[in-house]
Image (cartoon, rainbow, N blue to C red; front, side, top):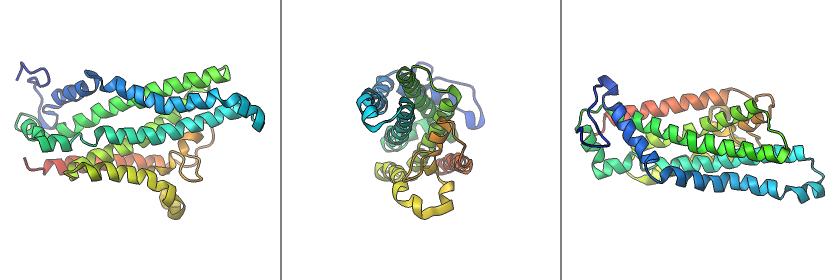
Length: 271
C-alpha cells in the first residue's frame, strides 16, 4: 500500500515487522491533528494555572501567615507535583483508554493484522507513540512552564537537577498508569474497566496507604503525595534525602510486567 499515507511498505522482520509503519501512524494521530495542542492547553490550564493562581495570590497570604518567599516556593513545587501527578495521570488514562478497544471493536485491528504486521509491533507502536506524546505534553512543556514560573517568582531559578529528577519521577508514575491502561485494553472489550481500574488504583492510595505498611513500597503510591506521605518526587525536587528507592524500582518492574502481559494477551487475540 505504497500510496497510503499512513501505511507504506517497509522491510522489517520478526517482531519489528510493520513497527516503523505503525509508529508513524500512531505519531500522526497525535502530531498531525489538533490533539497535541489541545492537550497542552488543557493541562496548562489545570496544572500550571493552579500554580500561577497560587503564586499570584501569595503576597498578601505570605504577610498574614508570616511565611517567607522561600517557603511559598517550596509549597508551590509541592502543589505542582500534586496537580501534575493527579491530573496528569488521569489525562494519560483518559487519552489512551480507547486506543486498543476502539480498534478491536471497529475491526481496524483485524484489518491491520491481515497485513504483514506483527502483533508485538502493534502494541509497541502504541506504547512508544503515547510515551513520547506524554513526555512532551505532560513533562517537557508543563515542567518548563512551571520552572519559569518558579524562577520569576523567586527571582532566581530553582536548582535544575533536583527539579528535573522530580519531573522524571512524575514520568515514572505516569508510565505505570499508561502501561496499565494499555494492558487492560488487551484484556477487556469495554471502556469501563479500562478507565475505571487505573483511576480507582490512583485514588485508592488515599484510603489504603495507612493499612498497607511496608507493602506500600511496592506500589507507585509513594511517588506523589498520598495521605500524610509527602511523596518521593517532592523529596527529590526539594533536594531532600530519598526516602527509599524500592517504590521506584517496583513501579518500573510493574510497568514492564504490564507491557509483557499486553504483548502475551494480544498474541492470543482472535481476529
